[in-house]
Amino acid sequence: MSAYQELLAFQRETEALQEVSGRLGWDQETVMPRGAAAQRGEEMAAMEGVLHARRTDPRVGDWLAAIDDAALDTVAAAQMRHIRRAHDRATRVPARLSAELARVTSLAQGAWAEARAADDFPRFAPVLAEVIRLRQEEGAALSDGTDHSPYDAMLQDYEPGASAAFLEDLFGALRPRLVALREKLLGAPTPKGLSGTFDVTQQLALSERVAKAFGYDLARGRIDKAVHPFSSGSGQDVRITTRTNAENPFDCLYSTIHEVGHACYEQNIHSDYLLTPLGAGVSMGVHESQSRIYENQLGRSRAFCEYLYGQMRDRFGDIGVDSADAFYAAVNTVHRDYIRTEADEVQYNLHVLIRFDLERKLIAGDLAVADLEEAWNTRFEADFGYPVNKASNGCLQDVHWSVGLFGYFPTYTLGNVYAGCLHEALRRDVTDLDAQLARGDTTGATGWLRENVQQHGGLYEPREIITLACGKAPSEAPLLDYLETKFGAIYGV
Image 1 (cartoon, one colour):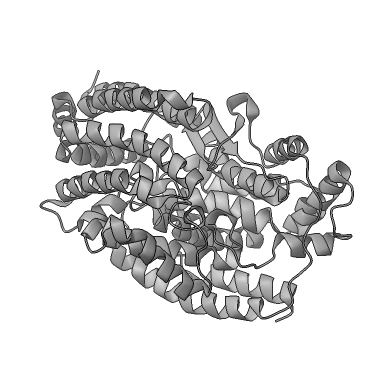
Image 2: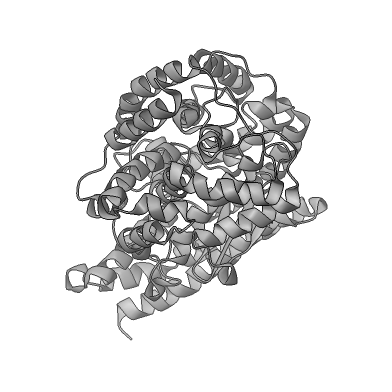
């Protein structure tokens, strides 16, 4: 075999082991016994040690040195780009640190869940401080000898090519129009919401039906419940979770649609890329573009709400609104709330901007963990106009920092920007989109996304795939135009 073939065979085994490690994480979030947390931490650390050894295996460096990238075709060159990037990262991080991060973040996840349930941030603060200390050490190792800051180095794990400076400029362009739109909408009469109690078994049954309608293949996936909905896996085993609330069926339905967007991206990647570096979504920003366009531009559209309204009436009877138009307004109500994952489209990104600013300060050492809760509460009240009432509605609401995902949050807003661009191009190309969605038929939309984005996996760089799909470079303008047009019509402002 050539050096390239030997490297790909070795990498295939590494990718398979990464999937096994991911399955341990899925199990921890769904069905693992609570008393198994300490042992699971050791298991995760052991698995990370094996993976780190493979990523830094001297043979990888030898194979890389023997391969002439200029002689490779487009697919092979992309495989090499990912492998070289991952190898450089892995060789910068000591095996000890990699294993310790896996162990501590596994324990921290359980500590976060307990502290969140008790609304007790001080209970979580010591383990969070340890996670941040380890991530700071890792960021320093990753950025040593480069032009990246430690935080920028962390960003590369989730959005290759991004920088804090780029994101600051983008977010700065978003904020003024978002704030102005929010103020208009919150000053207008609020649409009537749903009323009643919604059986959670029926919610889950409807969620499964909607998941299938959006193309989720349950022969290669499954739907379970978790505190924080997520998607896990790639290729032939892609699992999602959702949650239920008897008073709010939208939490279950739209959490499911959101995670289905992630899952369909993974399921629709070209089968030739299975268990290779190209066999997963290229970045979290592009990944989030898929989940958000499924959830919002498609799932919360007037057309799809017409279909969903009928489904809701069939299962729950009187739901408190008596027309598809009223249901559409209820689905898209702009409301005061604390929770990012339950935020409306207009305010969602403002939640993300809080986290982006605070986590940069945490990593830079400019904000102590002991002061995080107060800093969060102060910033939230300044941005949203009302105080945080409890820790689970404040800095304990998200799992991300407990598992060390610093640099992840900004990709949520970047994904919204990408989704705005993709939606504009999709409507240009699928001219009868609304008629399809009103029948519950998403194939025109999901087929376009599969063809233009999903099937390519990691073949292109993040902003490159959005540019190719849309015919122009991504910008914030399509998202802002979409939000102003949609919500201006709903609220009459």
